[in-house]
Image 1 (cartoon, one colour):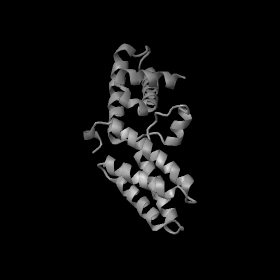
Image 2 (image 1 turned 30 degrees about the vertical axis):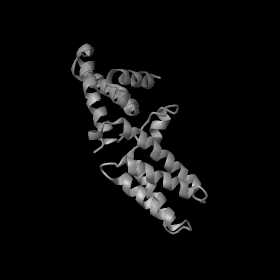
Image 3 (image 1 turned 90 degrees about the vertical axis):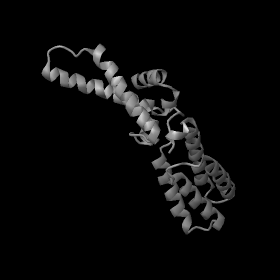
Image 4 (image 1 turned 60 degrees about the horizontal axis):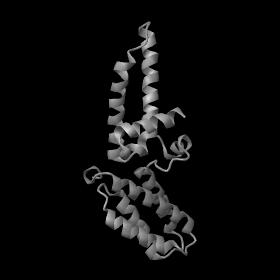
Amino acid sequence: MQLNWLSERLVQVFGEELKPFAYEGAIFGFGMIHQISNMWRNFHLAQPNWNHLVPKILNYIEILLRSMLERQEHIVDFPSLLVIAPDSKEIAVDKNNLIEGLQKFNHSILHSEVSIKAKELTKGLLALVEQKEINISMLEVTLQAFQTEFESSSMNCEASRIVKDCGLYLEQIRQVPMEKTK
């Protein structure tokens, strides 16, 4: 409940674009406050001046969150984020996890009986996602062809999950200004 409250406040203060990372920001905030409080008790009798420290903590949280947004990476792994915020659909798809899933799928279909076209589309989709500078238009076209090719395949379930994850990733990168996706 506290994480949810603080994550909502961070979005209100720092902007909607940071929403996918707000739960981690809340974790940072509570963690920093807790550790500063522990350290302070070891060296002082009184509590720290929270009116002075909390704004500084918030400044550092903003720096961390903006860096995470720019890099499109999470510190907390995706399954753990889903446990923290199971109802949240705003948690970003981590590019590294997306690449890892595509690599596993690509490896599993190499020796399968899917068509050559399906194998080539998988390889191409992986290559597009791996690029440092994402070509959104090419990714959209390839993703559509990938989905169509796997519709009647025995690998349809896994391919559908990849399409969904790639679609969420596309939504995320569309929300980030172009200079930040490079």
